[in-house]
Image 1: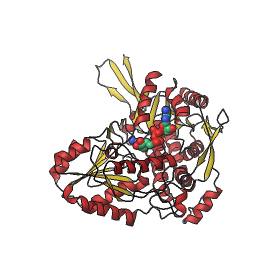
Image 2: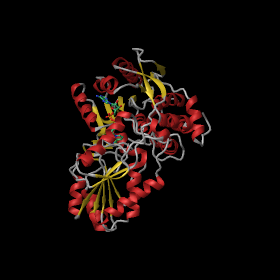
Image 3: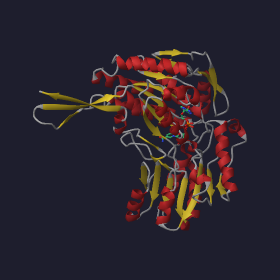
Image 4: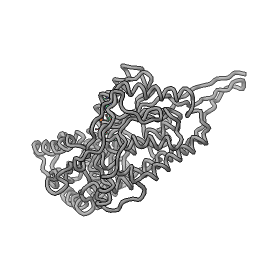
Length: 501
Ligand code: NAD
């Protein structure tokens, strides 16, 4: 597909034509699972079947790790001239950009996000990330340590070897790019295990990588389920590092697997429950916009979504009204293939039930639904897993909906009277991924942005970011950062070469 469809009908037509590749990509070839087994991938937008996907297991992981190891050891990628490496990665970025129509459609069909965002955000951000890291290929310097006159101590940064990347379903292309961009520019080989809910765009990326000139064995994609394919990857003795993004619960397993196997490095990007702290003097229109977009974008399936609002009691009612207004007027829920929709379907039925379950839990704990709260059960959205933009009011900071990650279009409101109380509640979480502070008072802003323990704290804005800033969490939101030059470091190790003469 080349031209970009501009109507729902045109996207429907494209969707009816597309025949996604569902096989694994190992050592430069598409191959079925060794067992021959597949699983059927349905779409959350309306339940249609999209593809049969290879249901890989330990034997496929083994083949991919072996291919990655061989590619690493013979230096076909890591020893390439830096300028050539850069040119290949830049070509990879271009091929992704040029493939926007197909990649965006696969992403939307797979996970239910709206097509407009897949086109404008997911695909270009993926390409930009690969481009960003490509540019480092000929700009990474080693160091020479201070020594006496008869010695030279060179500190070389070397790639780790084989990287196992395990990723979630909410931003499949973007998070995959964060991992492979930094890992590949550092000279590693990669075995990627996409989430079982979202394998299709990653499988296609592999062919584009090959077309760009990334040698066989350097980038492998092995689809499958967590226990069956992810676990053997994380336990594999020939994998040097697991770079994981997903839930905190599964992230903790990565540490166990590393300990049970070869003490491989682990980097974890896990869950979040990001607070907005809205002071009485805040610009409420700006805060409402930041809060609404920050929770309803991507149906709330965003790790750093601002999912709990801590608001001064004097402005709560006005703020709720404004958040609901932004949602109603700017973020329409619609069919994921409708270019005008801003909120699409949740990723699968089980997840939708979980989200709706949390709304019931909140009601059971005495909170009340101020807006939304339901699955869409009429019209053609009833065939998919669509949930309304929801605001839950009168929530205590200790309530389950304030402590646990809902991962859907649900924001919970809690009031405070003093700044100290707001800060304590903001930090009363096992997570520390993101946070926002809304105030016009400079001193309050300084105190709160310093005091909140989170990987990113936004002041009077939300979710602004670029490849230039590191992304990741404090506490049980994980450790290790994606994006920025810092991400490259975690895929490398230091070697000292000491010469006396
Ligand atoms: P998940 O933890 O269920 O799955 C993530 C990946 O781990 C998938 O590929 C899955 O197949 C695999 N997996 C599951 N069990 C495994 C096991 N036992 N061994 C090895 N691999 C296993 O998470 P999810 O539902 O796909 O994604 C949602 C979660 O991801 C949320 O908690 C969200 O906050 C988090 N997330 C975090 C970030 C971040 O950067 N911090 C970004 C996006 C998503």
